Image 1: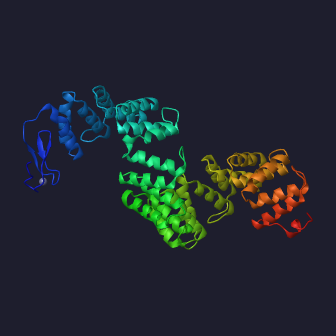
Image 2: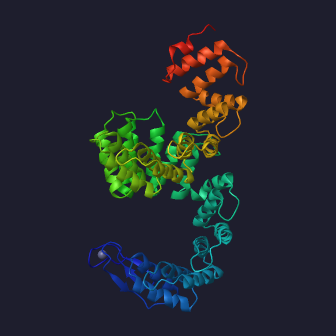
Image 3: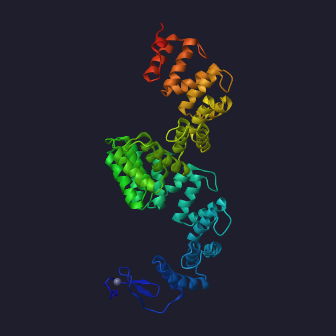
Length: 472
Ligand SMILES: [Zn+2]
């Protein structure tokens, strides 16, 4: 084989050219060009990002209706590489390429339908295109199809089917499939939870350049108390170094802030939070706000905390919305404004925050400025209690006990208080104890009443000694 005159590397045949993959300088014709050379040459220059040369060959390939050239030219139009972006033209080229036997063109058609590029958005058609590609043996087609089943895109969600598709031996080196299998084992979906299996899949996914695998691997080490915390730390550090993962930085902060199998180090935690917050990562913005609010790892500064919570809330962080509500209600770091506080709780609740629903419900019930609104309060407390938010279970029990926003109903009260008490809620234990003492919703049981009241006190609920001091 001929050697490169520039660097001595062995030359490789691409179409009618001999090229050097090492110094990329030599491109020497060794015979005249033929029709079958258009695609390899187009692809070679495409991968080299020499788009004008690539397009030149691909357009020649298009004239002779070479399926591979049509597909790659379509990608150039879709992304606007080497020519003006034209999604409609891209879609037409993919259609023609698929008809002429290019398998991957079916995936590209699927993407066009899924994202509504060059054609109307239609997830059902997208799924059919991926299915066609998968049936013709495309690995990408199988991965795309599996994701349709996973997320219920264009087909009814079927997690088992998604798992089976990802688990296809043909996908043994596919980063998306490996990553998803790791998640299945990490969370115990379809399969029994198995952290070791999860780690194996995630490590392999990372070897195949899955951008999310390292962060998830960090979570897996973090969740596994048998593991040395340095494994989690290393995984997060790598995830930031290799993929600039801000989630990884924020998690490093949490390890040091909470002292998860390391000594608490709030100053160090704050450096990670600050670094991720500079790039507007919502959770990190919240965590910086929290540090200023409580003065942990930094001098307390409520107004500064407030400004971070505002930025984080603007990016959808639910905890920050609730903090903004609390601070407005209490007048922390700014003038007290009850109604602005309510508005923040409402925003949090509307975004699905259970804490937001609880805060809003409680504020309606206690509203001193505008008068109590028990009906509205009851509505939000019930909404969050139904999703097992423990403080709401307690407060719902109290509403039924006292007829706040609803009829008095001792049976219902006992039901919700018991649920909250079983989760160690001190206030629920107290009220439940009283129910057993007074025979409300249950038969009088002084022994049980006493037990509950003592337990309530142990959970730091302010129970007076005189309230426990009765003969059981
Ligand atoms: Zn060379």
